[in-house]
Length: 218
Image (cartoon, rainbow, N blue to C red; front, side, top):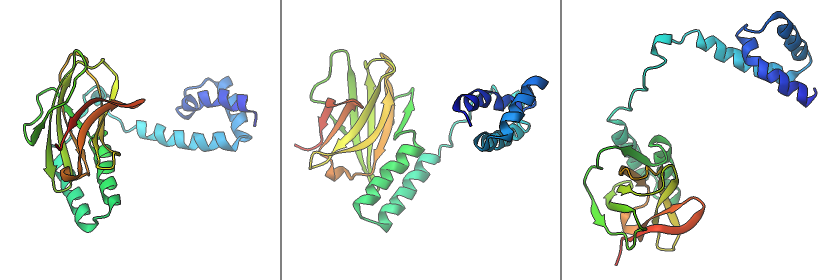
């Protein structure tokens, strides 16, 4: 089937699945569907969504999403600790980091309040003008927890947080979107034992040079 025809008709499939097209448009879309296998497959998926919409409660659409339960973070860390017990291979460390990144929003739990105190404070060797940052690292059975407070980075720009390994490679701890002058407090987690970490660093996704770096070993 002609690509342009598919592109045009696919813009109408949503309304078609809801029965919202006029008779002329409906006839045209149906004629296209009779000869297009791909568009028929897409329509089947859209009809499943349309059926689910009928079960939605309009009075609750504008309500904010409920926050995750307070026990979620503890439960995730407990499962990661079990995984490390079952397997000590390097792959288990990567699995721990991946699970945390997915379940904790790229490895970070961001709050407007100050991060919970804990761990060993570390010092960034140099900070760019206008940037204020402080951090602490805490060894856990599954890896390392990083407590980070930071302000002064350009609003809306993404930054990566990582731990440096003895061979110079980096283990990602997560990422965050800078809040400008607003202090951002967060906890990040990585499946690398604190005893194996040489430094804590922050950089941008496009520039590997450390914007902030704090040695963890003398």
